[in-house]
Amino acid sequence: MKQAVVAASLLMVLLIAGCKGSPSPPSPTPTPTPTPVAACVTNNTASVRFANNSPNAQYNVIWDGFQWTTLGLKVTSQYYEVQAGVAHTLIFRFTHNNQNACTPANPVPLQCNSYTYSCDYQNW
Image: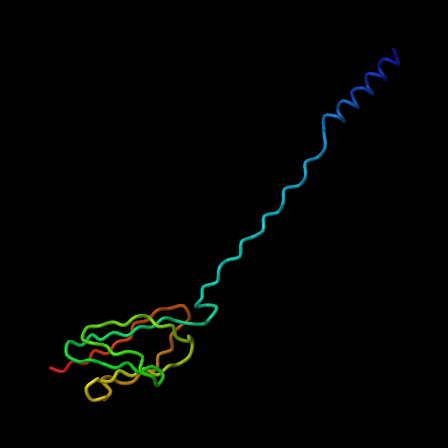
């Protein structure tokens, strides 16, 4: 009887050990997806455009010493990418005589922001 108890005990140990089976391999750790960086961050830029709100004057827009666009009556330009965080020179000049239509400005656009600059000369 002693041998039967020992044999039964040994059989139970083997059965329990066999039930565990082989361990499953660990799940692979997911690779985090990098957060995309906006171009305006990478390039340190802002977006600017220019508007003519005047009902009777056309302007040449001078940005940092270069004419970027000519604005007809009530026209808004496309957006342009410019360096952010630095002062720029902005001048609106009348197309017919090249005189300043508004006081020159020195805007400092902030990174990843959009701006619309305008000159509202009214000649009644």
